[in-house]
Image (cartoon, rainbow over all chains, first blue to last red; front, side, top):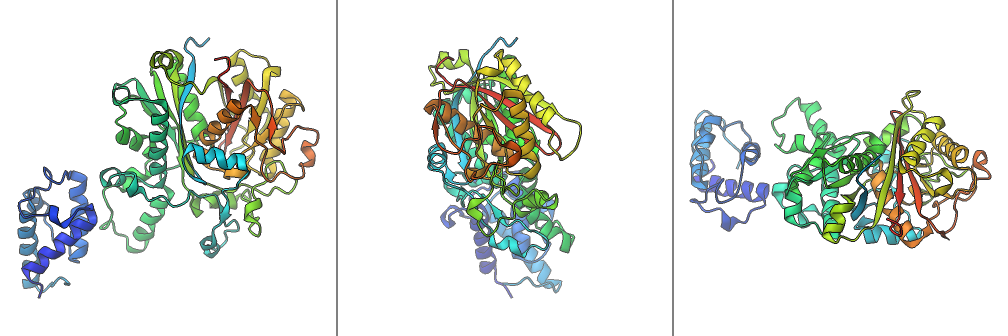
Length: 93
Length: 411
């Protein structure tokens, strides 16, 4: 089963690749819109990339609206992955 | 009568030779061809033309941040790079670009065919849009180049995107000329862009108008030659800065030439076949608008793509209208047919010819087509005093354009 740390690392990997960012830019407190200059189009692409990486349609639109920081994203994805695991839909590591 | 004169103050180019106006001009004068074999295209069932004049690979991340690249296909990348070069040469500052009196008219045949292809490659077998990125539409929309240029350069004036295949750039230049003449804009970035893709060459291949000279790719296309066998599609972008004479003088800009007339006529006879009467009509419109006589035209830079029908119709229209003594040549042997970019890339080279007072010959023209025997189809680099040049472009759909261009000696 994928660990929380592995989920965090995977998120970092997806974001650095998708948005051409340095890992050092992605601290838990980093704000997606204010610090990384992301916008609504980037948010769409972030969801597509994360869903592809975690091989499941797991991100609820309403939950996404509340994501402001990298930590929020970690929390959301960890919650989603564990929920899917409990339902027997384990995401690949 | 036009009340405002329109001059050229900047040029930018991305061509089958690579990036920059200087490279384009050097390679044309050296008689280099941008055409090459496209080996992968041989796997496409039914496609007989597997040569092209593509832009050499551009690492767009060297030139553009991700935030801009995310909405650009190749053609928009070319248009932005060329636009930046043109703006730099013209010396346009940020205030001028953002002030509302600078606009954009940049056309293309369609949006990015490479992006269309990628989308349908995934969509058709999977019937899914789950992996579609947000930037996709902005790469394939008809005004992708114009919109992305506005965004990248901060241009806040009028934005137009004439889409008429091979006359897109010529129409864009004509439109910019009209908008400046009328006083709606002081400065316009005008031109076109297109990218090489087998689905584009296919259009011409299907109607037997694409060159199949695949054994000697560097010898095709052959405009006006008895052995011509069709177009070779290419890619790139040419951008010209058009400006009112008053604005250029006020800024102390270097004036590179002038647009004196623009003819635009649809023949309304056949959707694909050229029509010599309509070609002549477009030329006559441009000449009349300039207020000059036919015998003042010093040279014609022809559209001449190397097709069986098109070259003869154009040549015949030129000889009937301007006589056999007028020098004529085409750049398609050098650049291939850069489609939506053709009118502007070729116009950039024409202005250089006017500056150098030298005519560049048609590359690969060895044996004149018998129907055009007696015409002055230039076959060698030729010094020639020139004031006025007619630049023609035509497109499938019956569109015929002619720009009347003038050098800088008597602006």
